[in-house]
Length: 135
Image (cartoon, rainbow, N blue to C red; front, side):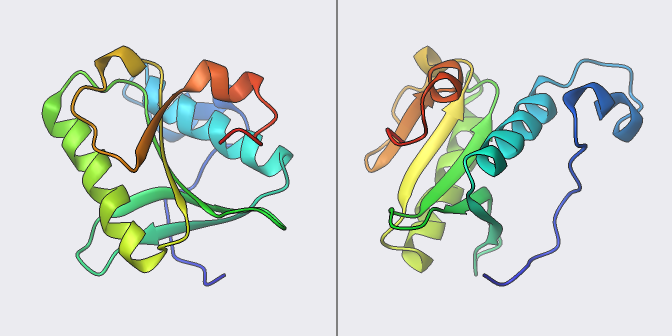
């Protein structure tokens, strides 16, 4: 899988203040880091996607013998602009990875209104508790 430069992730969510010194809570960064660690634990081959249009997808996860997954991670989907940006990236990346599942992981699945299929909104807590086979 070709490597694309991306934002570094701390090895532990507790190190996030070292990377971002704003002093504000960063639940989005913490969730992305936790998802990264869990995907590695599930032995996924990981990449990052930047589409031809310039949209980004957090993870392209490949598992031996299973369907690829394009995964966006967003702690909250309350803001329509944020929700649209996350979905737009997945839909655009699907043209380059047509066999991949499109997954939007969030802490607030109840706020994921008007997310079109084939994007699947998944409660991050449920995803973490699962084996990974259901996503």
